Image (cartoon, rainbow, N blue to C red):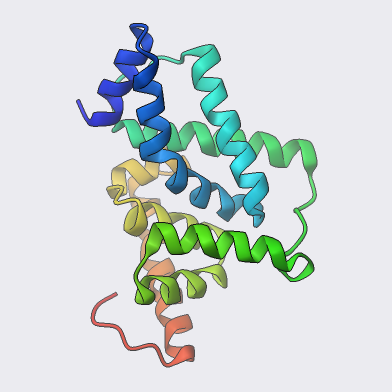
Length: 184
């Protein structure tokens, strides 16, 4: 049982500190992942909050068939899709709100920390949304292909194909910038 699962089990048994640990461990990564759906860091924060509220109020069953992180991100993805269905149009772009971009970059800097990862992340922003999602899950959140397939609701083969195409597209974006990389 991974740390998130044990924290969740403690929460279900009445220890509120278990849930605080879950938020502390997964909040930033979940927000940045959800930002791939909304292109609005504030909305992503709200959806992450909704995800945690859903877990607190409904106490969904964690079966252990995947890692806790995979399970949590899948719930977050569903909350994001629900939000997008309700609001049909995309949120305001970063070009229209410079302060939002500043907040996003601040959170990125905290979470990513290394300069080469920031360059990589910026190149990812120009990719197809499905490519961004799969690359984020596999390389930033360290999901296995199987776990990523569960989150994005595709077969493992389709996930691997999507990952291959995403890496190829990202390499092309990085080449345009003259970025030097060891292995992608």
